[in-house]
Image 1: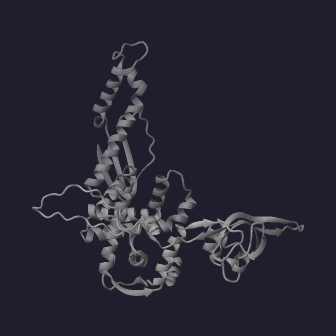
Image 2: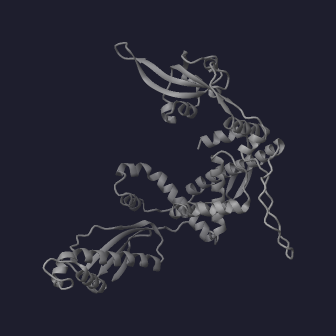
Image 3: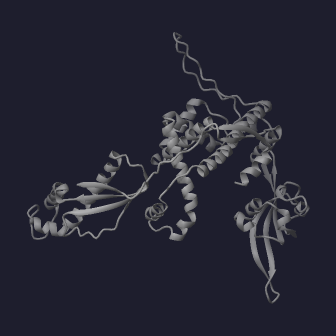
Length: 473
């Protein structure tokens, strides 16, 4: 088998493969012989059918399989041996091949090559390093949400401030003949604490069976919150305006949980269990029954929440900083990418799932992601950074902790228990989780290298300011 590279320019090339019969004949003949020995062919004893008949029956399919196998492996090996840095994957070119008659074959693959490029992550590059100011207000809000989640639910007859009002919300419009019809209708639960001050009075003091009207834009001026309340996308919620009617069905009231020991247990507010230190030379003590962890008091719990919020907001601030740095790197790093090849590869790789127009529309975002991936890989290579098992474990522990938080609580687990859960998580989904976490570790290590190289200037913002900045992205 002969393989040649034909470069059109720095980023476009073809791999040409020539296959002669000697390249696959031994395996081809063996498969035919194995088939003849095992197959029950009418009119012949096992293993006695003429080879000519066997070739006529399955020769075309066997030759096609054997040729495809050696070509696929040959191209893969060639790419590795020649250290070709590919964009996407090779695209096989259409060939008019008759595996039933021909014995020698020629194939071609179009490839895209990573261009040479320069990037700048020196001290000359300046960026804001976002820091979110944390106050006791955020701690109070966080605890209030926990108390509400773990509290009790009542269904009072009449609504009060902060109650949830459930019922049908609809809008009536007149057609050309003056007939009124419902153009929007949904049964939903409206949190009165999300209603703007100018309209909230209409949601207070109502009972099941009551009907009232309100202005949807004034009541829920934020498109995102309006969409969440009405069960529609933000873009669709922005189109809703004017007077709406609500027919009340029921009232729901959350009674916050008391800040007592039962509440602290429910949210997992336990003091960390210190591992027992075994001193060399001491006699090992008998195994004791594990003691129930000690519950935090209110002051300890508040301190723990403050620490957790500081950690969380530090991560969010860092993430926002990373977004801005990433944008600037992508914008300022010039790459001569083979756009037409990449569009063909997207169509080929997705097997007709997207139209040409859809690929054109999504291509600008795709190319940003590709540029960033190439920059990351170069940074890791230039900085001689390798992703270790500990890097992956760090990310896995974070993911496990986040999952526990989403399920409704959980302070930091003992290290050994956390490691066991992280290991189990990485093994789940046939290694899919491992690959995802490894990718995340690579992103974090490359961004860490960038942050350590550029000039960062701390920028302190309030939670409200941070939210506005994040929503504008």
